[in-house]
Amino acid sequence: MEKYLEQVKPQVSDTWRADEMWLKVKGNPKYLYALMDDETRFWIAKEVAGDKFSREAPEYASRLFRQGKKVIGGKPLTLITDGLHAHHLAHKREFYAHQKPVTKHVEHIAWQKDKGNQKMEAFNGTVRSREKVMRSLKREDSPILDGYQIFHNFIRPHMTLTDRTPAQVAGIEVRGGNKWLTLTQNAKLEKNQDSI
Image (cartoon, rainbow, N blue to C red):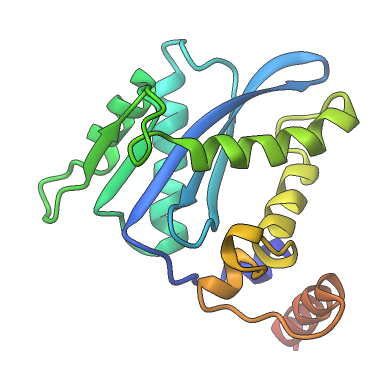
């Protein structure tokens, strides 16, 4: 299903948000870096990392941004983060290229009305509520995270999106009463056509 959905390009806005949240993998603390579109709430990319303050942290954030560019086929005009230094360095590497337009980086730690990163904090809360009942992921590349990303984008209606999914707002319609079944059937059909 994930490979099938990689072919579908969401129509997102020119403002993206990034944040990181703590979670457990095999009982050990890790961080989930996530990249989300501001307008559609489409979860664009994810990366599981060991630490957000280590020397490797900017590379984790850079990989997240590279994935985002690949998924969308471009880069945002504005990137909003919470002020983590790794995001600052990754922004310079991945979005502050010589090609125009340059992506503006808005770094805010304060919870001001329009300038905070509350949308990402709310997103983190939904991921946390799912991860919490599992007590711990078994591995960093857990299919649970892939499945939850699909659920977030294509299955779950969001109240802030007037009970539409991020995919619907991004121009992707999944038909049928059981969206999981529709996506599974479409992915299977696509796989069978590739093998013919």
